[in-house]
Image (cartoon, rainbow, N blue to C red; front, side, top):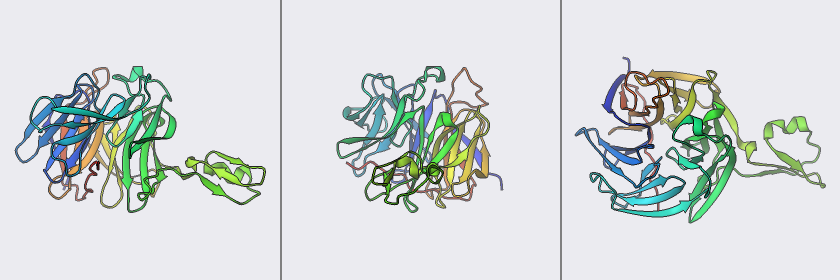
Length: 327
């Protein structure tokens, strides 16, 4: 049986970063341009949203064991807000982290990514962004020279992280250590005699006078999917319970299911009635429903139902519970 696609709610400029709250059985997401955090309850079809000042907001994640508290991005900062899920405004805002002060960079997408994200594509500053992590009052930069960070997705079972710099048209896989919270770790090979040909697949490296070769974090990077149509772009993603990637492909009307361990292998394609697909998340009581967000940039092809939230059922696949923020 073919998947069933429903339009749930529409009217968004750039809906992004869907997060399924399994406890409350509702979907949270943002409208990046409008600067709102949004909530949709499938069982009642009730929609609500709250404005947070004059900010671009690119992520909303519930705080674990804290009722009505959420981690959000506010331009280039990360904050905790309090919202009852119904009022048109949040009741409090407390900033936690701030990065790239004095630059036009804005936090992007929903899982701790950072890039030089504008309101329109024409304002993008090439290679001016970075990938950051935030933990224990510490901000760590893992990758610079980024155009537009997107993704992310973590496979804790296999120790992998998936990430895309949208304007490179590819999805990259990195080693990830959940115990240490580290994404990339420099590697040292105490083995003299390595040639440049041997090292070319290990990213950037240097050899000390004693013959010890040090390889940086790019040694862990492996490209597992590349879009060949340069008018389409990798955007948000999630994983299913089998470890496959579900990738939103902006400007294509498509979501791809990708096997990350067989490079460039598309297992399935879901076509939606909107061209500007931005992100995806599994939800529903059994985590077997795929929720899809989309945008409505008026200067680009839009499709039949731009700026809408969709639910896809009948995929016969389950996702994984979404992570909450732990204070």
